[in-house]
Length: 402
Image 1 (cartoon, rainbow, N blue to C red):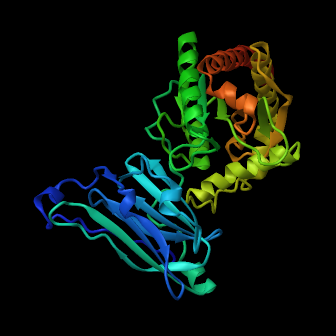
Image 2 (image 1 turned 90 degrees about the horizontal axis):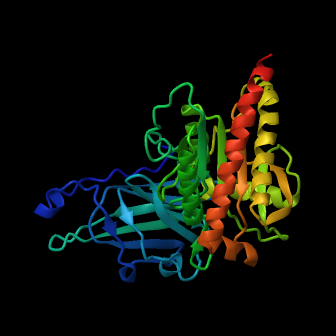
């Protein structure tokens, strides 16, 4: 059996309160929760919950991880350090919203381990539950054989809501607030990229709708995880005319500051761009998403033909955004136009750009990104750039068709 999947029984026979729909929200008691290493290569996860909830457990390889999905658990107020004060056989832990109604806990395994005991006993008097997972070391070949995503799950993970109905004549822009849910993106103190970009994305949607003539679709409008492939798939589902991904990343190497617009290239224009693209793809892996089978090399000839038309339109979109952000005062990166192999930009038939509104790793950018007035100015500049490009692109369509 390739995947470790634990189907959870409903505890309807325990006490009357447990006979309810168990898709409610359980909260974590961090004081009674911990991860601890034991003797002979064993490790135990104990998670104290306010109520029992359905869950499942499975392992993934490359890198080795243990994943627990819940329906659902509120991790508000819980820090990774509280569960894992010191790395051991589990080297890191992440948790948060994964998709509507579901939460996810991911444990990075420093050693190849599999569960040999999994249980969630429920206290009959209080309804409180304790998830206990005991792991033991296994040979590499056994881990590889039993690791893998659940066969019944859609790990593409589409956006939170069903795509809206789009009329054929509508001009559609998909706005993609980066990261979300279990994937916070860059974090500096109490500032997280996922929260900043959700706010910018919502404000940009409103600005474009006020201008009129644009149908706007968000890949996420809540703090929910959406995979890279899910973001691209949504753009295709709604027949997007443009795709704009919003980010405010951090770079550990080199100096990155100022707004930057990225377009797709198999070869990055510089080392910093390559590092950013690698970070973005790794975010899906760290969130426990299986990326096998997502390569777009199938029908590459047809895709190259489609890009012949799309690439010049993408270039003009990038230029319009850069010009309008610069006119609004930026500040812009010294090389505001760059290229890298970002997965979210790989739609062959949709002009797609990734905008680093600023970098949380730079103190000047961090101060700007935290300033609501500065963000509002940048939102208006982004909206103006998209609208300018729309008008120019529509004017060019008759010439392209000739």
